[in-house]
Image 1 (cartoon, rainbow, N blue to C red):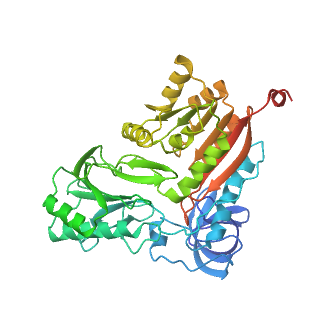
Image 2: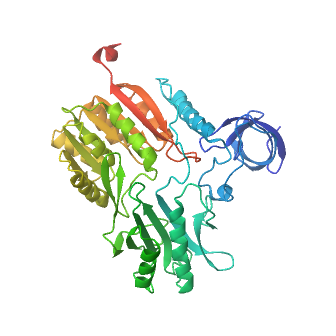
Length: 459
């Protein structure tokens, strides 16, 4: 029996995939069903058929999973921001652990048992950063919200349960000002119009707020009035920044920031340290879980006062600073120049003198440190982007053979791919998932690798 588009089938959901989608088999042909949960029996409509798999849409849930719950957000199915809201939170943690374990079992020679995912006590309103696009609805009225999944259609905000409520409130206040003053809205198709995005960053421990107004130009009508009204209404706003982005691009922020109010940054506290956050610098969007993540990574590294540490992809220096008090010297490497400036300032604010931050491409900087300056680390900490490590960086690490490698990853697929390249020389001690983004299919992982003893290499 061939699988045909627009045909209905009754299927058993045998597993969940990496995006949380249900997986069924029809005559051994794989069908992915968004919104379905392992163990359910479902009537589906086939909406797309490819050579190797198909996609189905739920028509009726015949047998419901005990872990299914009523979704508490009216827009989650459309926006795709948190695609697991229909599943009990504890079950989502198990799903993430199982997803990583599946990758380990398929790829690694060492079948390490992935630890249980570390979740949040209160998995709501955890994001300290919000990015809201501004557009127009079908009635040509200005709206602000989030992009629908896999599109640039803007869904108006309806009390998002993962964003900080103050972010939504401030952004709606700005939108009302835009409406009152007939300020133009950016149109992606024509490249005309002024307002593009509103970005809000919040210091979770300090309650300091940054408001970034992203515009396609340089001047905002009645700019001073907007700033004064924002400051009067929201006294926790410490800085308002005008970000200039005149390019026809999907990138939200341009490279030029103009301070309208304040110094152009806010402060937050992570662990025992203070951090300066600027518009362009990377800072974990869930600081509660980030603190757990960093503490696990630092503890696992077992750094001593004799150790030299490389922190690759160091951002604004958060984990470099966490490691500094245990190490002889830490070298932090990051390609974003503003992030390195922030990292240096953060080290100064925290009175840390044994960290050196270097701006540049990780591949080139690590090559220079090792091969030209003969600086050989005892511990290497990496926290790369979703694409994972490049082969030259992997080869350089294998060449110098640090005693310990701690790999923090936001993408389990590239993490496990990269770990397979270290297996010959390293034992994978543990893989610990951390739920940085509750009710989404994303999971952060920490992998700890230790150099094998010479006797192990000879076996």
